[in-house]
Length: 284
Image (cartoon, rainbow, N blue to C red; front, side, top):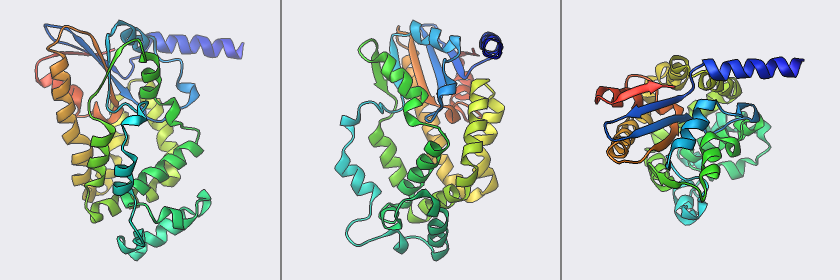
């Protein structure tokens, strides 16, 4: 009965609640925009019926970057941007305090420090967040974008809004100082990362944009020094992605666009940008 009641509850949830999906209509066509969690748990599936239905109606799948097509990734180029060459190490690029904190916080991860210190701060921040997420059961292989990429393969046209290359260029273009800030913030947040991922998942599942916005902007509201980083990683990309979505709204096809959920919320999010441009926007 427990199983049944939870299944019934799940069903009521899925038919009554909003999801993190928007329908955007122009005179010419419809574009569905879904917020994604790049790391997810088995429990996130099955997805809300609205999401599956919208995907079924669409001819084209659009993702930020096609993470299923790793052939596109230039490993040599990635190594140049992510790792220090020769005898250079992290110690020469960050303050002694940051370095000490890194050694302390990563003790429990079971990774030799000499492996970590060959990574540049932006890449190290991503590595640590990924390892901690996996430890909490959040898996990139269960990410929403990955799920739909696998479903679309051979069945729908797949386009990229950006590309892995573009994203790597962006992250590796930050100054040493900004990269160190990013790393420090990640180190500070490692201990609460699993709580934060749980909160994100709850907000995502119930289509709660207000909670999602406060989780996504928490770090920058706590530390204004992160503003320029946030500006580049979130807001600049929102503008560019919204303009690509506008291009899709001028065609005759139905698109299903997946972007990180944090890009859809708030006054400077993609949803508000498209509303202000006069499109018919509805959360499903």
